[in-house]
Image 1 (cartoon, rainbow, N blue to C red):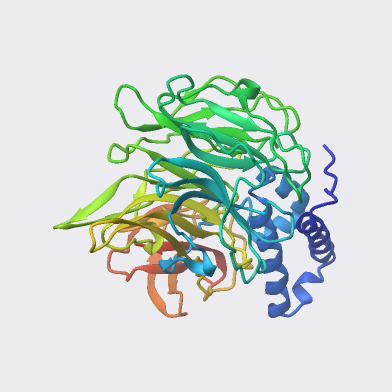
Image 2 (cartoon, helix red, strand yellow; image 1 turned 120 degrees about the vertical axis):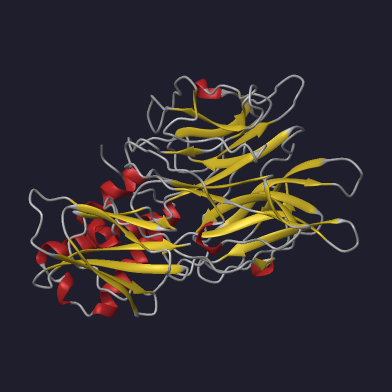
Length: 484
């Protein structure tokens, strides 16, 4: 398949050009003659463009454009590179919550090179639930966002209609603009259907057509459905990954339909419930996922929000979960959910978490936005919008070594860290060194064989770079893990 640049997308053109440049530098050997600072600048810029475009184009498509340049990004390698998050910051970048609760998604809806916020919004001020499509325009830049007050139904004059759950924007028909999908709940006529609003405008001036119900073979969920699209099998088109309600257990479940058509002409196969080892969470009645490559290994992971909460004595707080994809880009397998990953913790008396991942500051990693409620002293429920910045640790160990034969897991570790070396014969003696984010040597072990486990329960929480060395001191690989 030939991939043609989309003329309206400056970020896409930059991504293609920078990928080609890096491929030339790598093939000629000139890349390694650049200064370390220059190499890092090129890699950071390419990673930032990749993260921005990953919400619109499939990762398989982007990796094919990257070709050999994917090596310097670590894409396609099994390196676990999950990052810690700071925060929370409430109402960041001028976001005015007001009286509107928004289930957010961050996309560049006006094609000006930065991320805006769109979401299904409801307002209780009138005494009746009013559902709208809220638009917070980013009037800042890709690196310094600033959001204007919300506008409602700009691109959808008739609004979203009643019984809408959440929205999702994706280029489902491959024409270069973002189309709109909305889920529904408890509608007497249309329980759990998916509404599709085709973008009949342009990438910079969207206009959404009248809704179609369950197009392309999409099937309705039970009671409610929260829609999402992602290329989970790495075949170049978007598959349908949603959540709905399991009528037997009465908890949320995952609803997956493979796109058996193409990127330009989608056709969705039969429903698969809880595929790829995805698990329901009994404590969460309404499950709200957001999708992204959080550990930098080239496949999609999940952050899960919803109406679950953690209770400590007389206090409670909402939480999110991390579900790592331990499989591959074309054959996903998901691990068990981890509560409050990467230091993501919400204020006391908070509840409901509607998460959205996006690289809001253009630094090459995914940050986390969450809308929710917080119970205040007056006895009223206040609306909140929290931001958790992804604070990439400075790696204390260079990463030029071949990493594909050295594996560490799990990415999020508590007690035991497991390692594996792909080789036909075990080296005579091996050493493993763990470095904290500040460059301090945290621990050193002498090990043997081709696999094993190491105790890490005494490590302070944080990011660690772990290097494997042979008896001569030659590095066999570097991986990153996060100690919870």
